[in-house]
Image (cartoon, rainbow, N blue to C red; front, side, top):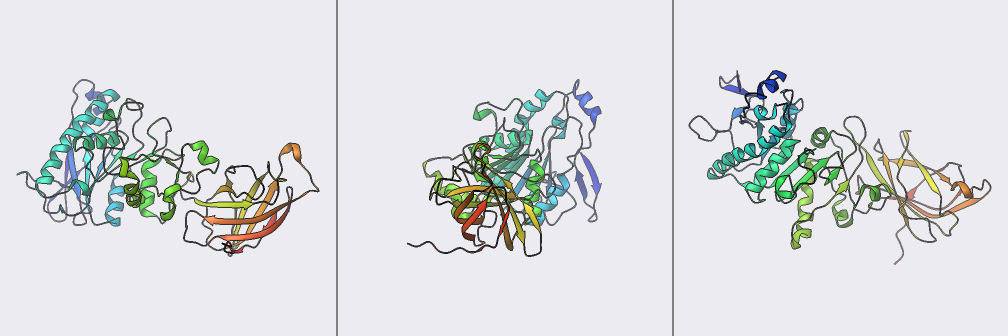
Amino acid sequence: MCWVKSENKRPCLEFSHLSIKDSFRDLFIPRIEIILMMYTRNNLNCAEPLFEHNNSLNVNFNTQKKTVWLVHGYRPMGSIPSWLQNFVSILLNEEDMNVIVVDWNRGATTFIYDRAVKNTRKVAVSLSGHIKNLLKHGASLDNFHFIGMSLGAHISGFVGKIFHGQLGRITGLDPAGPKFSRKPPYKRLDYTDAKFVDVIHSNSNGIKFIKCNHERAVHLFMASLETNCNFISFPCHSYKDYKTSLCVDCDSFKEKSCPWLGYQAKLLKDVLKERMKGGPVRTTVFLDTSGIYPFCTYYFVLSIIVPDKTMMDGSFSLKLLNQLGMMEESRFYKKNKPLCKLQEVKILAQFYNDFANISSIGLTYFQSSNLQCSTCTYKIQSLMLKSLTYPERPPLCKYNIVLKEREEVFLNPNACTPKKT
């Protein structure tokens, strides 16, 4: 534990400075030490101990406000997590809260992964003692939000089990897989460990409440706080079904839009409460992200109705053009079923740019290889394009469209005509 003098003359706590030498040392002299570093808007840049030397509660800790606990994971090199200080700043900028960084670097810095795994239980027991002390001072379990990375996700789960699932929220960011995957719930983070548990996992072999296609769960969660991106996701039985546009309606979530990834996932709590009347509910959702910060993507659903069966086996490409002249071709997912007569077919489309004011839709039709016909025409009775990222935006429609194979047509969409009742 390091101390640095602050402007108000009170020493600042610093995260444990360890190195690879400490991992070597741990081979012969294992140690574990847990330090609680507290931040509030009153001490943004100077961590203070949660409890004073006489075991009294730090005066800056407000028992009536939310408390976020940040719990890091396995640190074989002993380094300070690169994201840590920025994460604290983003949280306090978002909301007036207490933030507690759980520094268990002495315990996580080891070459023996199994030893770090065993230490997770010890950390959880230690944290439970501090929590019981906070409860005596008037704090509430419902106001506690644990955010755990890697092994820290399972520490959060073990704390939740000690308090019988009464923590307000646990967020697991890439929970560690080795020694935890396929284990029974009491040996890992489980969706019953808090009143609301959300997990962002980039490895489909592990826990999979929310799956993304990059191993950057921490940075995605942070981006959900410090950007205006709506990281919407899609409740779905499998990633295969998601890629086949079978889950674009978001089921029972559709009244409040599709579920959001990250900090704003808390908005789902009211929806889930309705669904939990019969007991705890586990929901798996999927999304794809872009490859660069801030990882935003924008989802649309294209709904098509055809008057006959001539387009049954075909596929489409889609481009959007906005009023500023920006154009982008979408990542098009598979359609959710064949194009059958007078049946609505939905196709999920993803863009890397936000098209708020669409002036034109570029559409190209491709017939299946064994049925190509360069002179044939193909009719679409109605086409509707709806933003899923921003469901409050009105959909756009076009009617009675004629296409030729592999010939791109640009359509000027209008407001949709209400369906006759």
